[in-house]
Length: 199
Length: 290
Image (cartoon, rainbow over all chains, first blue to last red; front, side, top):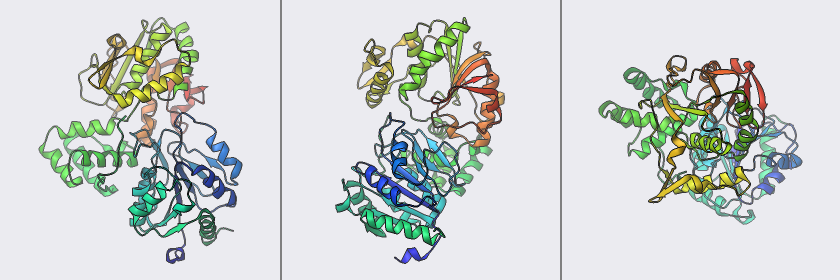
């Protein structure tokens, strides 16, 4: 828990694919409405289904959930969901940027790209979390978060519905800070919230 | 659409690296990368370095100084966004059912302009949709990008088969009936495919220098009056400041009552000229000039 001593995480990036939707809902249902750190969700999703995902998460979440528009400013107290069929970048001025560049790891949105640019912007103030999923997207991204001194968390593979993504992230990153069950991830997020001055 | 893996690690590029590269481009080529949104620019430059077996920004700068073909290839990879035919099928349905009837009724000739034509999927999807609606004959499509090609007719482009699968699926979602298929419009050859030649009939190409948009378009093919501009997922690649400039040029090119379509997650509401539009279909981001 060494890294938890340093306060002031500025962004929480969460990546997941198959089997991550339910646990994401579970996480959001446990966070207070005034959660003090912005959360960015990059979940692989059907590209033609533009609506329904946000609404489904809103049913669970006490925080507002939105799909950010291009150049939207990142603010605490909001959960941002990467929109269908776009990559979601984070610019160094703390704004989102969208892109329709080619799929990465067969995915658009690609978790790696959000983690690369998010950790470039926020450096050691970045928290990266990889949840259940059936491909290896996010592994290189989480390693980058680690290399830049951020906090890295992976869902315990035995706790994940599909362990491929967590296992790949653990192997690639090598010394992941925490490998935890969803219940423990929620506890840790609440701790980060309090350390950040939240109540 | 080509699938990518990060098996080959991409070189890390920082803001200072980008600045050094830009100094060279401004000085030697009069091109300023400052108009582009930095995150996607960095990612594209980084891929260019990896794809050309270069090592880092310094080796790219060296290649730019010593190999004259490097600059156009770099600019090409920066300006080309990946696309697919009939991206966002519902957009094309709205175009066919709601926008085209208005255009058809009001104008004896319809001029379209697609400012960032990239590899042409959007342009050809438009040609097919116009053809199916029976108004291709009275339409002209001007495509442009910032490459230094000669103005005139664009050459027929080959597309790879992975693009076919995505596009065929999109087309089915767009068309919903079984009257026609995407395959009706293509010719397959050696693992690739091309679109049938008649679709190119009313398509024209013109260079659009996005560095100085206000100075560059000559409208030489009778496009001074544009009835619809389709630039979906074009604005996202530029800084907010430059988006403002681009929208100003587009707005001036459009006739009063002309249409503007942008990508479904794009936002131009903070641009000065946005007040000159009303929403025609907000969900599909189709606007109409007042």
